[in-house]
Length: 247
Image 1 (tube, helix red, strand yellow):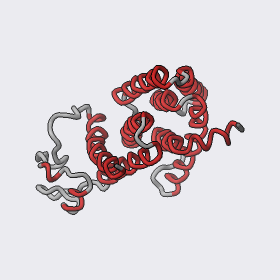
Image 2: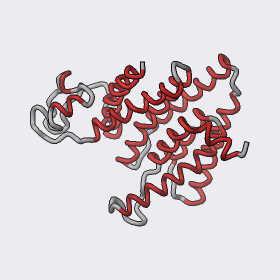
Image 3: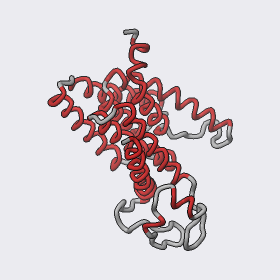
Image 4: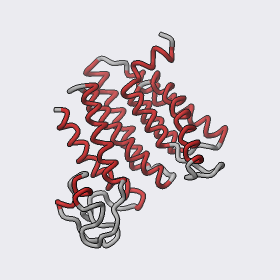
């Protein structure tokens, strides 16, 4: 079963590459079919096999021989491994479905934010709506406290909103991403996520400056930091909560 989740993740990861490329360009994620970004030639099914096609083609387009970014197979592998580990950690369960959905949105949002320094409502609003649906399911089918999740949403959004107003260093997209994490994780992990995302964001900023990807004072997308911290809490949140809150 583990390998099925991994392969499923590879397939979804291939689709996420399409979303990451097309959403900022204002293009449909369904039409036209996948094509080379350079020569515009429509790709055949054999050209679209996750990871394998990249290796088989030597990282180049079959038709025009233009270079294919290594990021495409890396995103496929990232999605595959994350799906694999969610299953290994949570098994066949409601939480596995819930966290796979969350991770899927986080990958798309984080990479788009990294590329464009922008967060698109078409990615965040559906994620919030699905988070609310999952919270309602947990309430009525599993007896979970609905307030836990809505507090997570409100606390996350409110704290980041206040930080944004006070410092001007964050955008509305960061509020939306934290709100997504809050409705999926609940209020305790939402609070931890705020602090953890700033720590990770600081590390990313330092590394970007050290490796000369950014200069001091440059804007650095915060979405990837929130995505990383949220994924860490998906796997280790239950361990961190007692340490953080001292219970």
